[in-house]
Image (cartoon, rainbow, N blue to C red; front, side, top):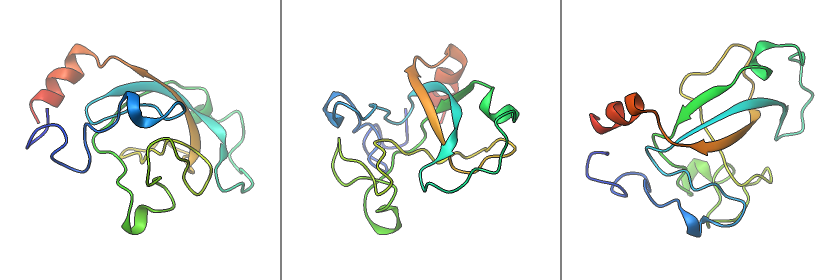
Length: 125
C-alpha cells in the first residue's frame, strides 16, 4: 500500500495483535471512526462549550503514518507496544485536517474497515 511496502516507512505496518491489550492496532492504511471527547490529556480547562459541533459529529480517519518513539515524539509516543505515553494514554493521533474548535481533545474511536473508495485511494499512493 505504501512506497517501499508495509513497514518500510516510519514503522508502518508494525501495529497489530502484539501491541498490547489497550493499544489499538492501527497500522498505516487502516481506518477508524470516532468522535472528539471534551477533555484534554494535559488536564487543562476546556474553553470549548459542550454544545460545539466538534463533540457531536462522527469523524472517519485513515492512518497515514504511525508514531515512532524517539526524538521530539517521546512525550506522545510510547517506546514499547502496550505502554502509555507521558499523558497516560495508549494511542495518539495527529490530525492533518482539524475541525473548527479543535484543541487536542481526546478522540474515542473504533477501528473499522476502510471504504472501497478509501482502499483505492490508499492503493494509488
